[in-house]
Length: 304
Image 1 (cartoon, rainbow, N blue to C red):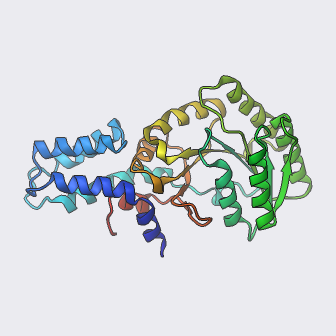
Image 2: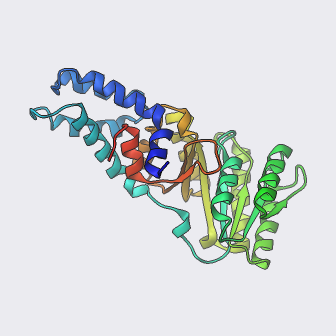
Image 3: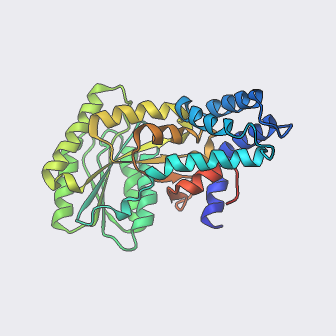
């Protein structure tokens, strides 16, 4: 299965909803005001968001007098416009800072998939890089055990603190170890936290601060992991975490399990934060570098 097929398969729930409903709304092959209003409702209900929906509707209105306008043309028009928004957020951290070590601090709410995402990234990066995995979720023994298992599976170095140890001290010691032992990447797992929990957000600021003291700003990437099944609720998470620690990139997981994949477009439009990867399944190779065109056309169930 090639990468385009993987995107189409992974986004099938979202594309089935959008494509089926948009085609059904254009029964007469005529783009009337009634049809446009119906498409607008479909886009909003897919969590694409009001601002992006308005942008798409303005494009669709331009086809009202086009005698050749049909559902396929409208789907391609929507996909092209979505691509123009998302392409600004294409960015893989593989091409970022070449100085060592690169520290990737993973943050997000409970259940977003941070720990599993780290495991999948180890699989992607392990061949050509020396990796240190740091378990800073010291409040949850299961998270530490899971990371330790991932590390053992791929034979990468692991650093874990004691249960209930200060996560910031674990992060600092891990970074010092990475400097001394010349690791290419340090992957730091943090505890899941609700974005409205001030104490836990302050703890995250402390972890970031001690990492900066150890390795400096230019080495640190703050990666927010979002659960794609949360739809438009992801927007408030981006807002809160960005305000707290200046998010440098996004990874969006579990998109294969939702019809709300369109919420990514609103996030891209509003924040223009790089989207590094998207998760399109549970297997170790189901974490894919984000590609705007693949995503945009797959979201509408289109070949290109």
